[in-house]
Length: 366
Image 1: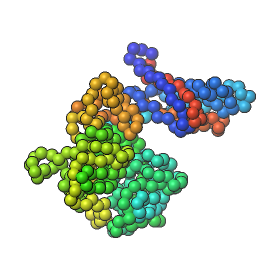
Image 2 (image 1 turned 90 degrees about the horizontal axis):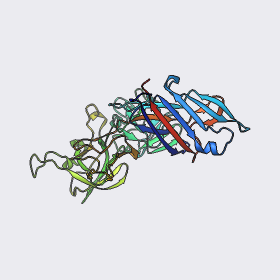
Image 3 (image 1 turned 90 degrees about the vertical axis):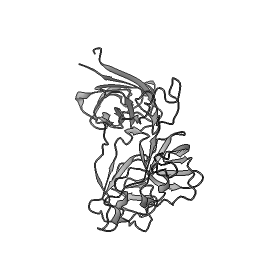
């Protein structure tokens, strides 16, 4: 390796699921050591694994134990090591046909072998049952999956029981869902609003994780048809030209915050938009504003923003936040998959639950 090569190392305790490692580069060489598998040799254990970019995405070369147990070799040709880069624009998984959906809250979607998990972010398109019915009001909004019923059903939170929503059935033409592969390119970003509770403070529920923290300064963009337009940052009827901003005073969960704006007497929020209004329909939004959009905390060594803030609970590759800008979360790195060796279908690359693993990653010049 030359002086311009990059390297990183680390460790983690496996949960038995695929592991994402965020790095400031995409590696072309990866090495993995399962300390637990080495300490307690057992059939199907994988103590060592490696990957070279020339192998191709999803591959890996393994050292594993057989029934003796003695070390032998194996390979993975899918769900092994893979690299990723979120890029500068949203990227999506494959479109999947929607077979049906309930008109309720939450909305349960029927998609054959969807492969989604709780916490995944998805987007819908189409969703017409007929030319004038269905739930196309959801199309184009990012939703976090709140529950997975089985391999063919998952749920998102949205008041789909309104009079303008109709259940889907019979695999409507043009009704699709796709996963947003890297949904949080910048944080806190812009959130779409699912519900607002007015009062001496204002509670806001978003369709996917807001990434806000206590002290975050926020503004609102709410089209008139959705109600609660009094929250909008402009115009300010009391001080013309001065935007109305609020501060997050508590974070209930990843999709709910409480803002210090007294909204007593404001127009009620409604999601019961008509199907006829969908062409050109604009969505209600909450967005971060202010000098530092990661909570308004001082940036210094030892502060919560040093060396890097978290986005949706995952550390970013950034240093301290930049004044007047969202935190850049265009993440990259590699994934350790759950794939099994061709020669031994019970051997898992990422190890078993509670296994301790050590990794090394390199980006070489030559």
